[in-house]
Amino acid sequence: VSITYIPHRDLEDRVSGFFALTSDISDRKAIERMKDEFISVVSHELRTPLTSLHSALKILATGRLGTLSSDGQQLLAIADENTERLVRLVNSVLDLQRIESGAVTIEKQACNAAELMVQAVEAMQPMAQQHGITLVNQPLNANIWADADYILQTLTNLISNAIKFSAPGGKVWLTVDTQRQPLPVPKGQKISKSKAKNAAEVVLFQVRDEGQGIPTHKLESIFERFQQVDASDSRKKGGTGLGLTICRKIIDRHEGKIWVDSNLGVGSTFSFTLPASIE
Ligand code: ADP
Image 1 (tube, rainbow, N blue to C red):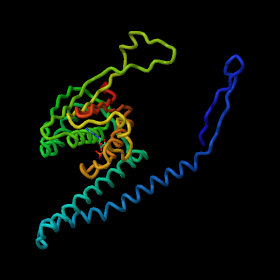
Image 2: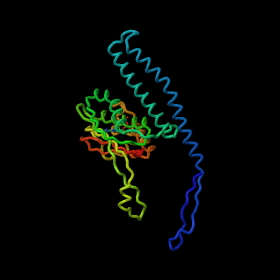
Image 3: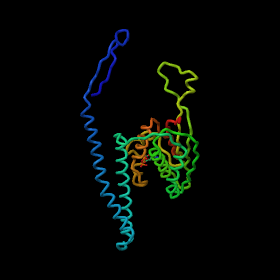
Image 4: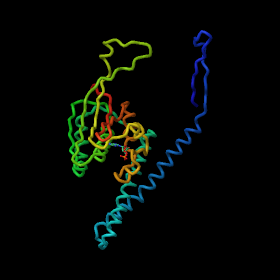
């Protein structure tokens, strides 16, 4: 049951009591649970046949079972590429569903932000080389309070996008910095200078590219599931439109913020903040 309290005011606008509004949300919860279970079951059931399909195609591609004509090889390559896309999609759907439903525990501990950036760069180096992109890593030493695996996943996702949406010869700049985030000021109150100095410290991660950029009206929507600037991106770039949704969920679970600034034809900067570790 959800209870909402609405203040009742008298003629002089003083709060004289409260109305309590109760609503039964058990149906809504049950439907949400069924939806989660459905997605989870379907994705799991798809994963096994897809994996065996993928392995079979790989064996055919080796030519051990006989050589294919060039048309046959081309068809095989298309089938293989599309199976890989489906595997990625199913994995992303499962990933998102697990994070959203709270099925995964985010285990936060003090970790070094610069080290995480180095690991992310190492992991993405082969993809960058393949696309002719230089990764320029300029991290500052700072400690964050986070689950290292999930932050690594966020960073590799943002770097992979930066590479995918840049032209060969481009650079992707990676930075880690610290920032003081002003404390929220209660309505109608002023905050003293000494309090402002005590503002919470956050660590800012940025992934900047010199790629195609994102139109202003899409800057927010691309964080929603299956949203892509160009509907053909999923086919051309092999994406799923779920990567940024997963990134946002991960950063939300860390009480951080994630956003993007972009100029069409100039490039994009994806930024996220995380609480600094005081350990
Ligand atoms: P995917 O990359 O799998 O399509 P994402 O959720 O990671 O899914 O990204 C959603 C969309 O946001 C992309 O399809 C693309 O249109 C846009 N986008 C993300 N990163 C960039 C970037 N660095 N430069 C330009 N567009 C981007």
